[in-house]
Image 1: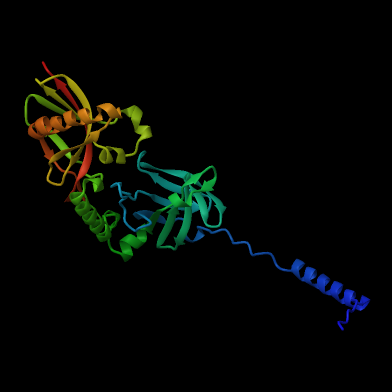
Image 2 (image 1 turned 45 degrees about the vertical axis):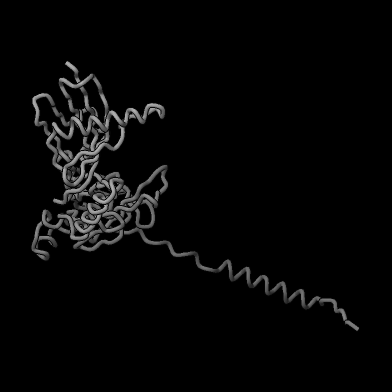
Length: 312
């Protein structure tokens, strides 16, 4: 026979006391400690110069050939003010320093996470922020700065020496150059772009330059990542005008890549044949070509050439 028992009043009293004790203990738990705001007091009045700017990989070149270049110089005047150099204006300006949370600051209108700070060096992670939210998948640039005193009196060198590309940069570019030589799809922008000059009085070459109105909307990288030329051919077999993307290999040989304009599918094949013929028949014969180089290494890169043919 199974015996069934009914809980007594004493049991309910003990259970109630236990529950009250649990609730009381939970209410008495200490809140999580608030992280103190980082301070720049340690480096107030010390002049710093940026010596290295890299991607997360540790190299200063992107896959497309864009080179990060260190250019910050500053002195923290206080925890909310910085005296920083403007490369564009070529002078120093006092700018705000605004603490956000954790180790994140807005410094001279740029979002930064402080990774390290000593009297000799500071390291920042550059943050991409959109709609007040950090885009961590695009926050992959790191800046390293040394104090001017550390550079001069401890390292016994100068900032011009320290900002030179590293051995890691050189090995990276060598590897990319080998890949680009083996397969044109790996071609990348040359830090010193390929150049074209005419060897015939019938052909003129102009490298396009940026207008003043365009300066605010581009970076200096645009000029070497996408070099643009205008080539005019007089006494051509007919009048034509084609914008062509051309591969310049590491030997300086031109190869038709594709049209720089959108093409209608039904005309693409015939247009590509014409542009290939123009590249092989005119440009290869009437242009002197120097391949693009990065860190002194010649490699395949692409340029845009607008070729205009004039029959008369």
